[in-house]
Picture 1 (cartoon, rainbow, N blue to C red):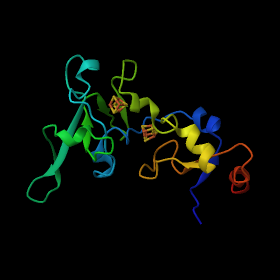
Picture 2: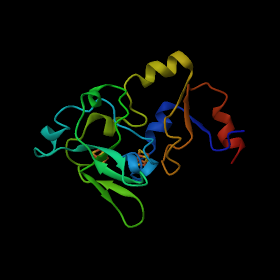
Picture 3: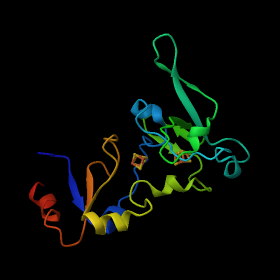
Picture 4: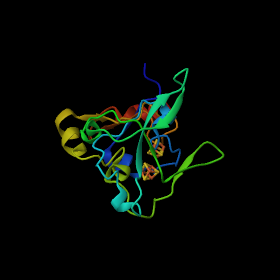
Amino acid sequence: MDTHRKYMTLSEARSIECNGCGDCCDSRRTDGYWTWGSLPTDQYASINNGEPLIIPIIKSGENNDQWIDRDLLEQDQLEYSPTRFRCSAFLPQEDGRGFCGNHDAVRPEKCGEYPVNTPGIEKELLKHGEVVLNTDAFSRCAWFGVTVVLEHDNRLMMNSEHQ
Ligand code: SF4
Ligand code: SF4
């Protein structure tokens, strides 16, 4: 049984606040699992004082255990390109979390969309009756293990039964 799974309506899930763990802001925090698709050729310099915001990175070193910056490739623009990245606005904290230095400025749309405001989430919910949020790589995420379901879904009762 999936003991960490929680069921919520979309409005409940949207009422949760990001806890600032920072794990979705840098691929190195998931050892390269988390990636950035559709990276524009200016790497968001237009909204970051002319400096690239999202920087592609690659593993390097004798034991392939170090991350270094790499140049932008054409394939980084593809929607599902597995571009490992770091963000120049990311501010790691001593307690292991990491804050967004651009939180009050204009950010790439996907920064505000993840994980409960992604385009088409309502449509997917209506079509399939559930949306498993893409948070399983982030055990510290405020939405870890959340599946969004419709208002009348019996699984909403399971949360209280297991408390
Ligand atoms: S702009 Fe902010 S929210 Fe977006 S990836 Fe960078 S640090 Fe994270
Ligand atoms: S992983 Fe979740 S809680 Fe952590 S910064 Fe990203 S959205 Fe916020």
